[in-house]
Image (cartoon, rainbow, N blue to C red):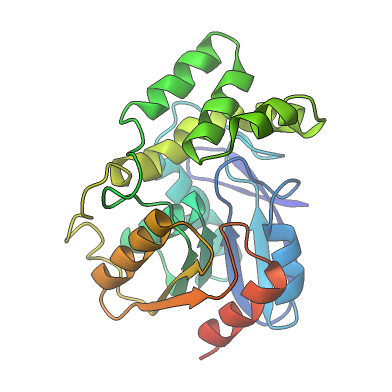
Length: 264
């Protein structure tokens, strides 16, 4: 493990493997180097890239200087980009895709951007996410009930109730509760775009790099509609559906697609 120091003094933990052009992977909600898909994905990408995986602030071995703001996460990426040599490719999954998108939109030195299934709700194909979701998380956390915040998150992402009840009994629940304080952070990036309304046309006008926006062929209709809407909105973006995949995409399927796009 190595660390970089963000603009507000927060230490951000990261790992680096492989060789080639630098590529930074951005996790979605509840995920970090010790829990989630990016470590396995990094191994698949390492033959072609120098791959950076990191713990977003408040997770794993990274710090969590308060107060939080979405700008702090962009500063974290700026520190990693500097460590990577000044610029890099960027890939984000789920809510991490929105972090990556905002990073590019803010003008950070990103060469190419790839996103997998940013969870956007742009029509009536499923109920919108509560506009006050971040506040709901914060109330549960303030009451000392991180498990309730995790359960709320899982309901929003359509995990069946019996599965949530089962997970509460498993060892992984403790790890999930440990990162529950970061749920409001992800909500800040995605909830405004989960209200069942069309995406704002000029919101990401700063994105001028080659961009891939992908989804899975077995993902729900609402997810795919949001991904397609974002791809249509970004100038020159490439939209691709990976047959047979869901939100929990297999790294051996995703890695060749990313490699082909990022090395084109």
